Image (cartoon, one colour):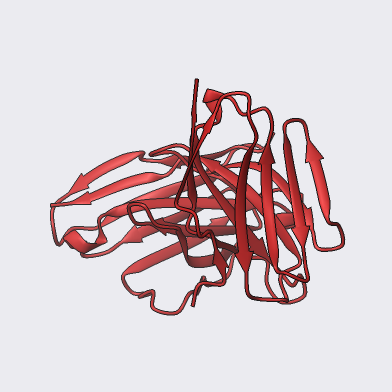
Length: 114
Length: 117
């Protein structure tokens, strides 16, 4: 049972344009969400997070949007840069009173071309 | 920022032998450490959660006698793959959280590529 899903395995975007990565979840008890960036043979690097009490969080070129009613979140990268090319994982955690382990999506490979 | 050091980065071992992977938090006390496994082109699958000084909690389907986890101190957790077989070949990653829990930071190690021949 995949509680966190990233239905697009890959995405190709031209440099300077917006990259939009999507993530859906099924467990309504999740109360915080994170995005990680991963290069091959390396551990994930934290990008940005959002609590379920918010619907948007912005950090530089990265913005995460959360739609709780749709159980959907997205990561926007603008403008996209070639160095953004990597695999992006969304992850969900909570509820805090039960567990703090993260459940990861299957990842989306982003390629930003010049 | 918080740093988690994971060693070795790559290891090749013969079938039937055991391999130990270390995960150290360098500048914070890791009250909880998580061990993940990643198959090619797949997600990070949580194997177990360990809290310092107590037994690890394993996810369903993970053999605790095969994947021994020790979290003896606030800065070190180890994963030992016992009697390794080729199907254990994978990318293993640890992560750690401090006293504030994951919402204060969830730092990953750089991963270990295990190849069993």
